[in-house]
Image (cartoon, rainbow, N blue to C red):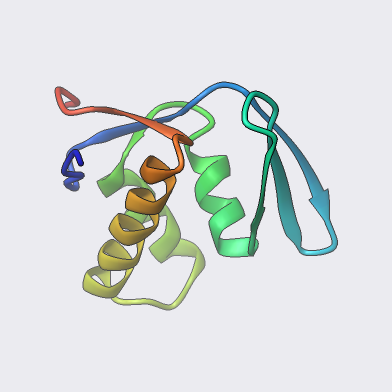
Length: 97
């Protein structure tokens, strides 16, 4: 498994169809036939990687929206990104600036 750091640039993998349902974002991986539901914070993260972004920028953006410490936010984002990576939902670029 690849390691994700604050400097890693994250981008969305292709093949997903999304739709808002109530306060969640429902996602379908057309190729795999897999469904995912994202809570509002996860949906915010998904929106933040509409264009490639570093983990550090994602953390900064979330801290503006939510009352959370940098350390907690970064740990949570890194954990979430690891899950997205395991499910083939994101791509990593370790040469980000």
